[in-house]
Length: 286
Image (cartoon, rainbow, N blue to C red; front, side):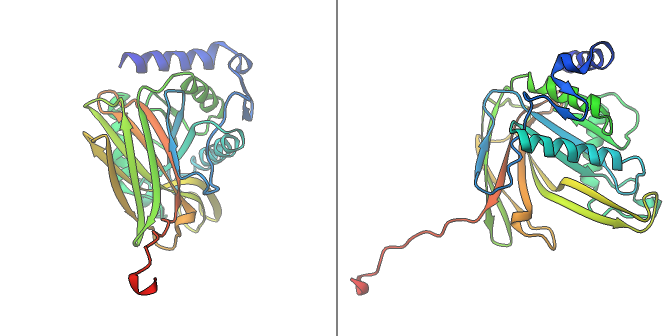
């Protein structure tokens, strides 16, 4: 809790007291010191977190919320800049389900994402949840459409060393995806979260607050699996979402403390086809 309060105090101080230039952040983009590994080339099968800075941006959003499109665009902006520059910044878009009653059922929404947001509300001592909410490394939260705050929060997160390590490898399996993970320096109350993420999505909304708008999204979480009290290595499997191929998805994994919700390490991987094993020729062919 002390770490979280210190982080939040620093964030407020940055937003109120100092100009963006002091922290290497400029309007509409990051300084050259910020970058992201959002590599979708498929060439990198395994990414891991060494003990260096990283940022996980979790955006809680909904297609049924008229306040959310600016935050969705901000996440797209961050993802594009991060991909261009090349450091450990991971963007995740969770579509919650509590605005579905307004006339438009968000096709990406899931109750488990709402439940995850409620867990953050308890940690941040908030009596309610809202969209669009952005959470950075489990340490700070704010309106996801605020570019200035998001850029400053990223800069602060990148300056804090990770305190654990995680690596993952994601491969195409029968009717789905297999993810193998390895962790170290984790604690007994840590949880490993593994997210199956759709690279991009576009939706024409016909009802509700965003009726007659075409909405674009990036890094949409389609499924999230959580492993409490994890071993040093393990494996999970995902089913492919209907209508999607493996090359339209990637995987993000992270270690999070259940004590204070702080994310301690993160990694990302593309999903690759498993290489066929070679068999020795039979004696009949010799």
